[in-house]
Image: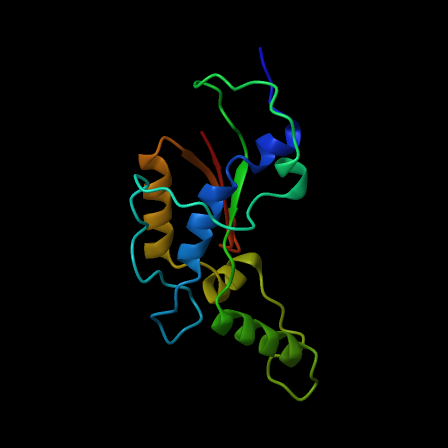
Length: 153
């Protein structure tokens, strides 16, 4: 059995991640802070190299062989970057939670409440799950905070 350099293997899915994360950065279509994708993910037939997506360790790694096509990669995570609006709303909430004069003073959020306010919406989550599954991946877990998805394939 042949193996890839560990750093290369870890970064082998970065172009996929970059493409999916860029979808999550699309402007919010809702007045609420829940993120909404403006479009469904593009077809993967056209591949685009994303600049600065390969770590230095992976760029200098020596390939020692290719993995067999049936090799399963387990526990990959797709992290979803919050929009500027979500980041601003979270910054305000954190300030309010520390301000004794605020109605939100020391009112902490559960991961589910955080996800409802600052995570990916149900419709968009369904789009990402369908996109992954259509490409042979299985969705293992959606974080309660709705800011990352664990998948395998």
